Length: 157
Ligand SMILES: O=C(NO)N[C@@H](Cc1ccccc1)C(=O)O
Ligand SMILES: [Zn+2]
Picture 1 (cartoon, rainbow, N blue to C red):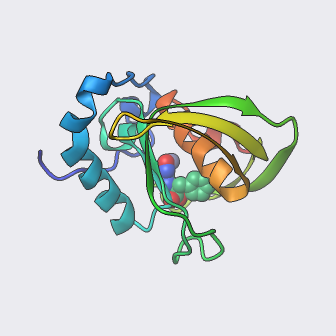
Picture 2: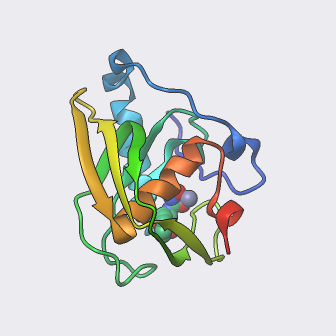
Picture 3: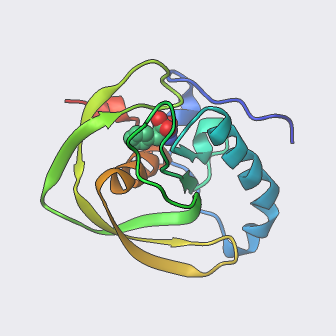
């Protein structure tokens, strides 16, 4: 696989509804997911979705940690999430600043659910059900939008 390039806003791939992965495909994509995480780290990202490197599949990485772009971000292990879904979302919403590796240099205030319950598969095919809140819940919602052809500016206040 050649080196990954991050699609910029205007690239139609960012507007596609990404395709679910079959569990049989997970291991096949392992090298791609490693390259995806490197690309995110190279750009000081705290998350990245496969469609952003023109791979329109339902997979993303959530990887909050303090970095030059988000000095206050909470620490978590970078987590690859396959076929992710929100199974419950709080009524309560919070506004906070977001950026996007596909829309460099622009930040906007975005309203997101404060608290969500999610499910996703791991690379090994294990289903994970968990809950998120705050900035990590925000990153999840931002990445899930990418799988549905949305970007944060579509929701900017
Ligand atoms: O473009 C992406 N992910 O799609 N990366 C964003 C992730 C993000 C999401 C929500 C709030 C802040 C930041 C980034 O700036 O690292
Ligand atoms: Zn983004």
